[in-house]
Length: 377
Image (cartoon, rainbow, N blue to C red; front, side, top):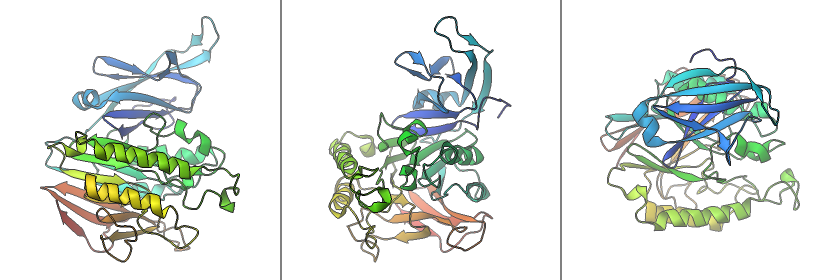
């Protein structure tokens, strides 16, 4: 990345649907454009260029960026944004290479992280020790909470340390992200499909759906302020059920395309495992999600975090309480938590090749922890 005093970190290129949302954290109030080939895309809202934000959002068609293989962030800082004749500094330009996931590449390497809880350096080391991935999955609880903008910006420190703005990212929200003063502003800092934190995506031979369980206890739990507290997730999950039904019932959706060879569910909470109260919530809704996925979409793997362990739950196994649609990979173990004192992180490294998915759990030193797994598609 070229030196640019305006950028807080390198951009993060998130996949949402058939577009990329390039999110650009900045140090100062400024305008942001992104040039891809001969086309220029702006961070604007209803025709007005945005400047009073900490993270800019520019949506770009996938085919445009995939073909160009690079993009340029153009920024311009305000001296004064007056109603007439605003004063601005000269523009700065920073160019980034981009490596898309392509249908015809021999293999796809994916690294999965979750549950970083603001302690981001070991997770960066783990991802980089496994070799540069083609795709990064960021699966919730990356900040310790939503109590401050500094915590939320952990997302971008992680993204910069692993991707440098050069490869795509799939992002899912976690339960800790929903807590604190800035939780209601989280949508300004993360990729969205409209206003939704759940969506589908397509990257080369991969189709996936991102789901969002929200918090992990009942809405009226005292931790959230009780009956008239700070969350309203039951209704949100009902809306999500309707979304998942629409995805499944549309037989022309991308998951049925011949070029799709791998199907993933990305969700922070492995919802088919019902934990002890107060955590075992929404049995009816989560059972319906599992049934829709199993009977209509047929995913190959569900990638999760939340439990602070690395494990594979097979359908019909001890941890399958609601009817898993496929194997569940819990792929993030922050070893520095739980008084283990080891400054290391274990994530999940996947290789997709020849209609097979290989999984290794790797730590911050690049060592493989536990047995490897293989699934034939």
